[in-house]
Length: 512
Image (cartoon, rainbow, N blue to C red; front, side, top):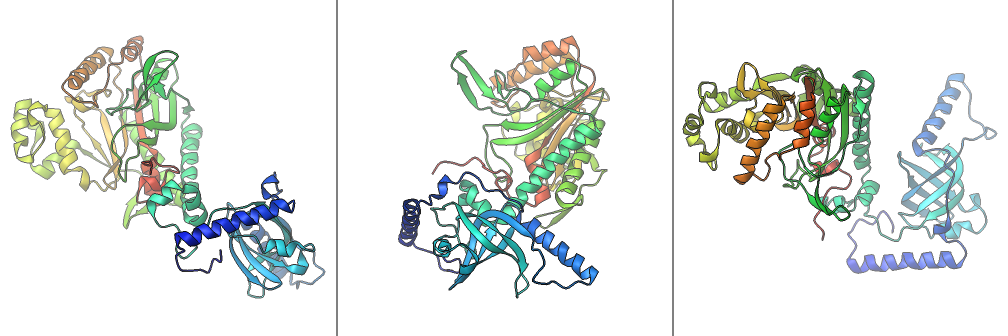
């Protein structure tokens, strides 16, 4: 297809063009040129490297005061990639070849490649994958290009790529056919390269600077603990037992702290059978770490460092722009108690309220569902979520979470109604959750029982009982600081991505 065709092709035209491509493939095979028999092609240069090397030689010549002559040895290259544009002009043609690093123009002359090959070359289509052997030069229009001496078809594209004017705009189609999205929207590839840089820097920082050990814990579990969320369920046929996909790896990682590892972390997939929106995908990437002999403040520092270093890895600066707003991720971040935010927003001072009944009476004007079944702690948390979260541009740490919503964190010795827990917010999103870990097995068992009671009352996200974890705490776990960071949301922020689907290569989609 001519890439200068601006109108949208009809379904009938597309079908006809696909048929033409199949006929071209048949002709190639009948002539002994089946492109799918090609096994390899030695690539000596990426497109960007070819351009860089040529520019470097030009600078060297200019600095030495030397003019280029026809006798100069050319920079010879072998490049490979996908044809993204073609311009045929009789006995000469230009094609744009895109590889994983960029794009470069290739000049093909009939008398510059082996006899009889030019007519075959003219049958190549946009989307075909080719290998090119030749030399680098600068055209009369100043564009660094490759003068082809040989063009080899390595794979035939039987589909029609969207043209560069119309592109691939429909978000649903982009997510379903990410392979096409990556081809026609190069900026999408850059987002995922930044994602890889962010993950690499987080791992480097934790392992090299902070001494954490990268570990693996089970994805298939009997008990999906470590968070309040609904799990995906499955069945193991050989053992004949029901199993779940993990919603968190927290309890396994803390077992490793019990076992004698001082600093462990894991970055991997979690699964929650919950709603989907611009910030939520049922399969997502999380990083959790645990530091023996540490506390909440230690992992708050780690949160600041991980987030700011992620931004620098992606963009070269810790000051980011997200959807028109500016956020400075450089430490230190602000800190505020949940109760203070509720008091500031609603005028209700829960520090002065001791009983559940008093809390329900104070919350009556604020339209909470099932208020008669809510405890003081649940009321504080729901008022915060409903009235305060949307104002937390941040970056900011919210502390003072009630015990009722924090079954795995240590009580605050100054106010046992709350815990030594924080959530980190940027752009009104929770991006991290951490605390001084509860290591009292008696308190932990009681909180699990309270969660079981909540489940009996219909809370399908209540934390399940995990007796083996209680047993691990009875063996003895040192004071520990724990942290979980949502990698996908962090990547969204530092790449200015409007949806979580824009930073997950293959997001969960409903079948057509």
